Each structure stands twice: as structure tokens, then as C-alpha cells.
Amino acid sequence: MTQSFVGRTRRLGAKLATTDGRWAMVSSSVTFLVAGAVGWMAIGTMPLQPAVTPNRTSLPYELFLKLVRSGGAHQLASIAPEFAPQTQDQSAANPTPGIETRTVTLDPGDTLAGALEDVGVSAQDANAAIAALGKDFNPRQLKAGMSFDITYNVAPTIDASGAKPAAPKTTTVMVNRKAVVVPMAEDNGDDATETNSQPISRLLSLHFSPSIEQDITITRATDDSFSAQNIQKALEVHHHRAGATIDSSLYLAGMQAGIPADIVIEMIRMFSYKVDFQRDLQPGDNFEVYYDYYYTPEGQPAKIGDISYARMRLSGKDMVLYRYQPNPDDPAEYYDPKGQSAKGMLMKTPVDGARISSGFGSRFHPILGYTRAHKGVDFAVPKGTPVMAAGAGMVNFMGWASGYGNFVVINHANGYATAYGHLSRFASGMRRGARVRQGQVFAYSGMTGLATGPHLHYEIRASGTQVNPLRVKMAEGRLLGGKDLRAFLAQRLKMDEVLASTKLETKVADISTDLRQARNSR
Image 1 (cartoon, rainbow, N blue to C red):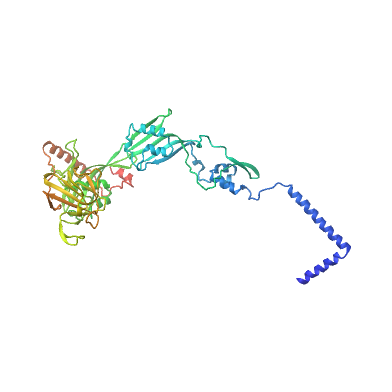
Image 2 (image 1 turned 60 degrees about the vertical axis):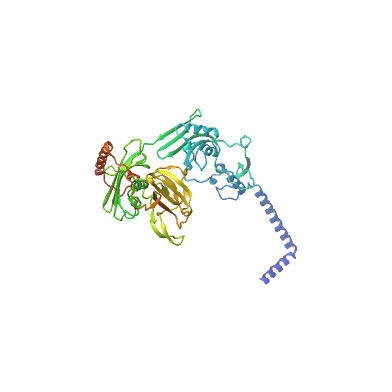
């Protein structure tokens, strides 16, 4: 390599040593310079083209970001379709530009007027709509969590001074070899994200459903007045005769048979005067119930109906109850086949689904550490379980009572009283001297006082002395006689005929998932 370079250098020196060699070198250099100058001049006369991929837009990156932040995607799409946002269905655009809808939900403590104004509805429109609503519906019945679908006109954006926004700044860019003027977003120096919401100009309509059987729509007329349309859905009643075998509890057996929970709970209340659901139920016992349930025209469950008949077979013995209302002004009650009311003076269990965790008598106290008399019955229930008044009466004591914790004593007729301990709280409106109905919820279970876990301590006191709630004999309810008894017996015979012609369902259609089957079971 070194020898070759040395050889070329010697030959070049030999050429430059002669006159002809020197002129040849100068002539070649001048020719090369002239050709380069001509080529450079020719390139300068040609139009410049962006070095981009064919069919793509040459757009400054900073301007592209500004257009995107300012919501200028549609402006960008008009000049450069390849930048247009891709959607699955371009036909899904708003068919009525300028009219929008949204859902407003009431939060705790909100008023409907306040909720509407919070989303941009004027106070005038909100008050006018509520005034129209008040003609057929009491706005005080509105509750937190209710949703309202509103339709409205979108107002043009106006700045704080009341003027329309100024024309946007523009800049010129080369797009597909053409100069195009495009709007330029204001750069405020931050990356704040603008909301998609637009101010509301006029409220057009408001729709909500205060219940599953009621729809209310408020609409704006051409004269800007509001009117309300209150539609009551005609409910369809379905009659069911259902039953099941009890393996563990009446409640669980009812759920497994597909019977609505509120029907099973009402059935527990019916028999709570006669049945101890902890001691009297045995595996293999069974029950059946004939009840009504109401559905909307669309097939959705709406509300519980009446239980006309119920039977429980406990250890081979039937207990049957029929619904009967002797006086239209009094609530209906349940009677056995002979016309004896099932409603005794006191309920045996003042809580639903309770398990007896400690009986009446002497026991070792788990906190005090010694044996002493336990003058009541403990029902193990979760904290917050509603506690019902075992009978009608007056609250004689309500407050804190040492080891009982939160404590309530209710006086009943004939020298009887009931007491309830370890309560977590009292129901609203309850106080000493208040009157309570049988079955009325007046407090909630807990573990206040000397308690190792959540439960209800329940006592029955006869003339001031605690007696065993599981063994005490209570006065029976009313016994029908005369024309009331004859009317009841006639109604009972009709009910027996209906039962004989109605198939017993051992698996009722699940009203929450199989509405079609429920409708066919009528």
C-alpha cells in the first residue's frame, strides 16, 4: 500500500515537471468548476418539495399538538383527511345538532332545582319545570339516588364580557404541496384538558321514574311553558301457589324454591306468633303459600301482593292460615280454619332469621367469669338487624342500662312487658312514652354493654318478673263469631277451591332473571 502511494506520487510529480503536464491539470480543474456551478444554478430554479411520504401531510409537529389540544381535529380533517379521527360508524353523529341529553343524579342533601342549576340549567327554567311537576307529584318525595334524563339546547360559547369569542389566530402550512391557512390554538403554557360539556341555553324536557310503575315527563311547549305528563303503568297480577321441603330454615327453603324474599319474610311474620323458628322446625318439614305478585307490562317485578293462604307442616302437624279482613277500615289478619286469629299478644321472636345463642336459666358469663342467672334469651344476629316490638304498647324506658348497654322496655296489656338489650341504636322518632305497634321496628341489634358479639337479649316480664320467652303461654287473638265467622268460612271454601285447581310450583321462575317464565306461570 505504501509503495503504491509512493509510486503514484512520483508519477504526478513527473507530469507537473513538464509544461504540457501543468496545462493539462489546470484545464481539467477549470472544467470541473464550471460544470459544478451550472448544476448548482439549475437546482436553485426547481420548486422545493417536502421530503415526506407520498399522500401524507407535511405539518409542523408543534402546530399539530396545538390543534389537537384545542379540539381542532375536525378543522385538521378538512385539510388533511389522513389526520381525521377514525370511528367505527361515521353515521352515528348527532342527528340533531345543537340538542344534547344528559343524566342528572340527586346527591344526598340536593334539591332538584339545585342539581339542574349545577349542570347549567337557568334558575328560571328549573323553577318552571318543578312548578309543572308539583301539579301531579310532590317534589318532597324526591330522594337521593334518583336519576333524571334532561334534554336541552346547547348555547354558543360566550366569554365573561358577554361577547362572542374572537376569530382564532391562523398560520399557513404546506399541505400536499399547497399553502393552506389553518387556525392556531392559544398556548397558555400548560396542559390543562378542556371539558367536552357546553353551556345549556334552554331546558327542553325532563324525564324520571319515581317508582317502577310510574313515569313522569316534563316538556317545554312552543310558548316556553312547561307541562308534566304522569303515566301510571297498569300492573299485571300473577298468582302463585308454591311450596318446598325445609332442610335447614324456612327462609333458605323459600329462596331455593324461587319465592320472592319479601313473601318469605311476610310468611315468617304470619307464623311468628305460633312457631318458634329455632326449636319447632325439623328437617323434612314442608310448607306452601298462595300469593300475588305484580309486574309491569314489560314483565319487570314491581311490588308484592297479598298472601291469601299459607300452610306449614311441622313434625306431621299442619298449621294453616287464611287472610281475612272483617272490617274494611281495619287491616287484614290471618286466621286458622276455625276463625281463630293467629295474632297473639306477643311475638315469640322479635327478629327475623335469628339463632338462639343462649337460653333462659343459669349460665357461665363469658365476661364476668362466673355463673349467674340469665333471665332472657339471646338471639345471635348481625349488628344492625331490625328489632321489632313483640306487641303493641308504650316505651317505658329507652337509654343506657349498665351491662344491658342500650336498653328498651315496652309495657303491654295485662301486666306484661318486654325488654331488649345490647342495641346498637334506636329508630328515628323513638323516645320514652312513645306508642309502638306490634311488629314495628323501634331499634337495631348490636353489642353494647357486656357482650362478646352482636346479638339481641330479649326478655318477657310478667308482673315485673322475668319468665322464659320460649315457654310462656300468651293470650290468643280474636275469635270470629256470628256474621264475621260465616263470611270467613265462605271465603275459606272459595280459597280451598282455588288451591285445588292450581298446580303447586316447587320451583318458581326467578323473577329477576326469567321474567318470561314468571309470566307464563299465572
